[in-house]
Structure formats: structure tokens, C-alpha cells
Image (tube, rainbow, N blue to C red; front, side, top):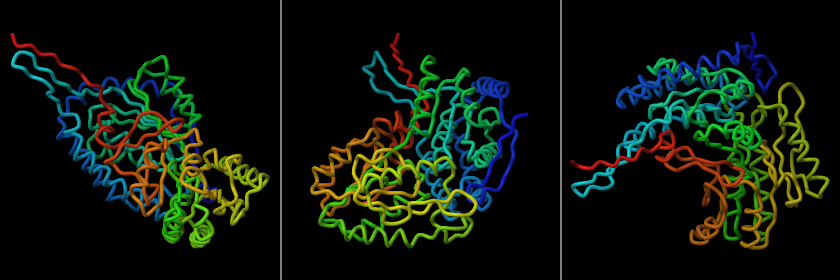
Length: 457
């Protein structure tokens, strides 16, 4: 039997060894999901809403266990693990409040003879290949609305957050969701590949651009709904009229929270030359205050790098930046001892010849570049193949709106960063992906519209 080993990235210790799925079990689970669709689709919306409400209550009741598990398998500081779980609750509340109305029949025309309406029917069997960095957020952004709209879900959590995925599945079953309508698959890339080979109706992936391209190629011939939530190289511009201390404190958190392992982490900062030195001083002071250490200590802010291979990426970006003339202001190296730990790293005197300013870092590392005016900042912000988020710090709302309207990004921020709202769609431009989650559009994305033409006899 194939097994999956889960190690604590903060200590290197073995946390669990689980039996993994294989091609045979994947096919059986996909067949069971297909078979349950008629019965699950017939369950009234009120009953589905009650199940998700019980799931929410289960999360609250087991908060300590769930947070501890998340910290042990991904290396997220325990306080941030609790933040993720608490942050999931209003997302669930949004889905509970909006699901029924989002898929209600729309009556769009009636002249007494011809009646036209739109109904929303489930996609069918939905594959969710999810990410490890925010497994509750990115998993439930798909799972909850997919179930509420009558789909069966085949859920493969990342191999780095499988215990969390099993907890999510267990709590949904305890809340009343049938086992065949919500199934968790255990394993790494080969299990995902086996899933994509099944008869499915939608694929929802969150992860790297490279894996997203492979998934798109794998399902191209199936002509199924495909959504890819991929990476980013998210820029922020600090304008000459901004408060340097406020901006620095916000952006240091935006760059380093979750140890920089967020697709919407601030990854590039452009600062007007008049504010540059003051901003950098405040930024470095803020980063120096971030505690790094035991991930089970509530005071710890910087956790572990979940994937050991990412340490090599960070090392390479540091070496490249130094070789091309960047000034290292702090960090720039791995920390000794067990586990995957990297010192918070800040560079100035950077430019776009450096990998640090072009390719996703996914770690506690940031480059700060001096600019002379708004036009230069805007040009640099758009000099990327990604387009997930972007922000501007300024006292002038009109200028902020003008600049952000020209930035190629799915989400834009004025005087804030690294923020997601369930009321707004989460989407990307360019290599940051296709499709969307969240908002009422993110509920409807799990359905297909059916057009009705009804003529009176």
C-alpha cells in the first residue's frame, strides 16, 4: 500500500503516515460521486444550508485541535492558524446568506405570450485540487458553494495539508453531507493526475502557475469548467504624500504575514524618492519586531517555510540580487537548527533585472525600489506576467483610483494590502489564472445557466 508521510516543517518531525489513494480508489470515488448526484441534487436548499451551518459550528467547537493540526503540518504560527479559522467563519456566513438568492431562477422577459427565464443547475462532479498555504480558505472557497449548489466534490488537499483536508471532510460528514457527495483523496501529484483522468464536470485548482498549466493541458480535451487560481508578484506603490510609518507597518505585515507564503503577499514595493529613506527605516524597524521561533508559541509571527524546496528558491533570489548590486538590509539566509526556517529578508537598490522583482518568492523576502514619479511606478507595477493584486498608498483618493484603474490586477487596494473579502470576486490577470471564487459570482461559477423559452399555448 502506498502511504503519505507528513512532516512538521518547523521541526522536521514525522507528524503522521497515512494510506494514500491510487488509480483504483480514485476511479471508485469518482464513480460514487457521479452516482450520488441525483439524490444530492434533490436535497432542498434549506437542508443543505442547515448542514453547512452545522459544519460551521463544528469548526468553532474544535478550533484548538484544528489550529494545532494546521500549525504542525504547514508550519504556520499558531496565532495565524487561529486567525485563518476565525476568518473562515464570515466567509461561510456569506455563502449561507447568499447561496439561495444567487441561484434563484431569474425571470427576464414576459409579454403575456412568451416567457423567458434563466435557471442555474449544478455542474455535476467537481474536482478541487487545493493549496496548503491557506487550506481552510482556498478549500472552502470551492467546497462550500459547490455543495450548496448541488455538486458532488472530489477534494484533493495538498499533500502538505492533508490532515487539515481530512478534518474538513470529517466535519462536513458529521454535519450531514453524504460521504459520496464530499470525498477527500489522499496523495501527491499522481493522485491529482488520476483525478483529472476521470469523468468530471469541473476542475478548480489553487497553486503554482506551472502546475496550473499542466492541469489545463491535461483536461483540455474534456471541455469542462476550469478555474485556476495561480501565483502573483503583487506590487504596491507608496506615493510622495503617503505617511511613511503607516505605509511601512502595513506593508511589512503584508509582505511577511504567513511567512510570506501567500499568493497575495506584497512582493514588490515602489517608494517615491522623497519618502524612500524614511519608509525603509520604518519598514526595517517593523520587520525587526517580528518574532521568529516556536510555531506553537502565540507570540511567534514568522513561521516555517512549508516546502523545503522553496529554501533553494529564496537562496537563489538572494544570490541573484546581491550579484546585480542590490543592498541587503537584513536577513538573506537560512536559520540553523531543525526545520525550514528563513530569516526575514529586505533588499533596497533593486531593479527589474533581478529575479526578486520578477518571479514569485513565496517566502519572507521583499525588494524596495525607489521611483521618481507616478508614471515610473505605474510602468514598473505593470512590468510583470502576473496580475493578482496591486495597491497604492496615498492621501489622494482620486489619484489612487486613477492609478489603480490602469494596473493589470484582479484586486486593487488603496491604503491597505493582502486583503480578501467574501463579498468581492477573487480573480487574476495574465499568469495569475482564470476564473474566480468568492462573491455571488463565485457561487454561480459552480452552476451552468439553463435558458428557458416558454410560449403560452
